[in-house]
Image 1 (cartoon, helix red, strand yellow):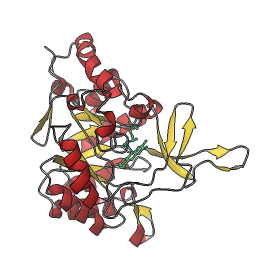
Image 2 (cartoon, protein in one colour; image 1 turned 135 degrees about the vertical axis):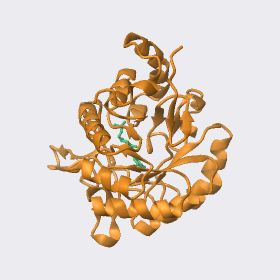
Image 3 (cartoon, helix red, strand yellow; image 1 turned 45 degrees about the horizontal axis):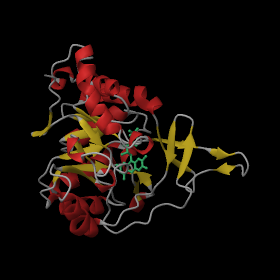
Length: 303
Ligand SMILES: Cc1cc2nc3c(=O)[nH]c(=O)nc-3n(C[C@H](O)[C@H](O)[C@H](O)COP(=O)(O)O)c2cc1C
C-alpha cells in the first residue's frame, strides 16, 4: 500500500498536503464540503496582535491563469483567535495546525508567536515574512537576509514549538535568505509566498487593486517556486515545505523531488474547494504510476 506519511520536525503527518494560510480561513469553511481531518494539516489565516480590517477594495483581480490579490491580513487579532477560533476548530479538527504569524515589527511577531506557542492545537509556528516592516520604512521583512534573520531569531527565542519561516518570492537571491533564516534558528522553511504583481484597468487607466500591487498565485508559478525549492534544498538542511502553484498530485510529486518534505495548496482552494481532497485521493495512483512506494523516499531525489 502506498505510504503517504511524511515527518516535519518530529511531527508525523498522514500525508504531505497542507492547506495554505489565507485560503482556508480558520478551518471551518470547509467542514461541510469534506472531512477536513483527511488533510496532512492546514495553516490558520495570518494573525496579528491587534485585529486588522484589511486593505481597501478591490482586493482581487482575476487573471487568465490565476489570481492577483491583496487582502491585507484581515484577521480578528491573536486574542480572538486563541479564545474563539481555536476552541471552535477543536470541535471539528483533531490534528494540530500551522499558526501563521504576521506583524509590523519584530516585537509583534515574537509576541503573537508566543501566544500561539501556548496552544496544544498548534504544531508548527509559521512566520510569514511577507509583511511590511513599518518601523523601518515599510520594506518587506522577507526581502533582506538580515531582517529575515532578526525576525526568525526573535520568534525562536519566544517559543518552544518548531518555527517554519515562510519566504517571499519577489527577491533576487532566495538562497541567501533561506540560509540566513536557517542560521538564525529556523526549524524549517515554507517556500514561497505569492509573487508581487499588478494589473491595469484599461477604462480607468489605473491599477485594478486598491493597493495597486498584490500577490500573484497561479499554476503557472510552479516552475518558479519549484526552482527556488530546488536551489534552497542544496543550501540548507532543514525541511522545506513547497508551495506556490501546486494544484495536482503530480505537482506534489515534482515539488517533493525538487526537495520539499511536504506541500501547501493555496489559491487552488478558492477555485475548487474540494482540491485538497482530490489531490490526496489521487496520490496513491500517481505514486503507483511512477513506481513510488513511500513519499518520504522521493524527497530531493532530483538532486
Ligand atoms: C486570498 C489569499 C490570502 C492569503 N493570506 C495569507 C496569509 O494570511 N498569510 C500567509 O502567509 N500567506 C497568505 N497567502 C499566501 C498563501 O498562503 C500561499 O502561500 C500563496 O497563495 C502561494 O500558494 P498558491 O499558489 O498555492 O496559492 C494568501 C493567499 C491568498 C490567495
